[in-house]
Amino acid sequence: MNTPDAQRPRSELLRRTILVLVSVAIGLGLIELGVRASTWTWLFAWPNYVLDARKVLAETDNGRSVHDERLGYRPRPGYAAPGVMIDGDGLRTTGAAPAGDKAPILAVGDSFTFGEEVSDGESWPADLQRITGRRVLNGGVSGYGFDQIVLRAEALAPRYRPGAIVVAFIADDIRRTEMRRLWSADKPYFDPEGDGLTLRNVPVPPRAPPETTLTFWQRTIGYSYAFDFLMRRLGLLHDWFGDHVRVHKEGTGELISCRLTARLAGLQKESGAPVLLVAAYDPVVWDDPKFAAEQRRLTAGLLDCARRNGLATLDTYEALAAMPRPRDLYVLWHMNAAGNALIARLVAGALGDKGN
Image (cartoon, rainbow, N blue to C red; front, side, top):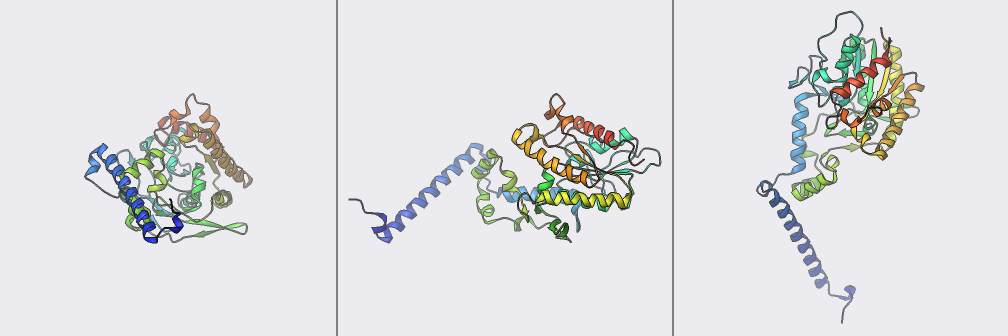
């Protein structure tokens, strides 16, 4: 006769519970060993994969970036690596300055403006310099949110007195304004207050040591190669490895970014340099129609805000879509030389005679 669990002695329930937990632990252990044995190398090495990934990121970022109390970080002046050179002012080189006394064009943005995955001469600011015959200052910084991009424009414009300012973004930069920390680096952020914005987290704290930012689960499951293998297959490493701290609920970035275009309008008036807001697109747009629709919605909303605030805008989507294979304009995540050349031509056309 079976006895309901509620009527069993507590000692027997505890024994069964322990037996189940031990069985699960043994099963997971066997899976872990099996997956490790399939690669052999990881059978004898048991690192914390999350911590290792963050250490590599910190070493890379600390090598080519310096802490900035207002922006979070910026390119390290004088940094040099194969294909990448940062000048003494912290700008990526665009080649020899053209002859003439025309005011330069200032380009700010994220990694698409900086030109990740291509050499110095293949970024779109470098191409724009060749097309226009005017010096183009590449103030792009990889990983920036739209908030940091605007703050970067405000910091550089008074120094260089540009004849025109090109502010480029991808839709994900809007989401980044909802964060206080991205990729283990603290950043400034804005709180919407009344009809305006209030800048927070300034001075920005320096990057925290990677080992201090791990969660309980990252400190424990982070040692599992099987779990790491699963997360890779599911494409979830961005969130598992990443150290991101959200301060605003999802969707708030649209309001923040819209209001930031008013700051760009103020910069345009104060500097006398026309501002052109340029929408670029990451490669997933050409792989996933649902993702593309959301990215275009976010982009259209921000461009509309910019126009209402008196800024010129450029949406590169139609020109990219008109190419036979838009996906061929990218390396892995960022645009290749051909893609950047197309962006530069579009920007040059949109600028026209502005800033002359």
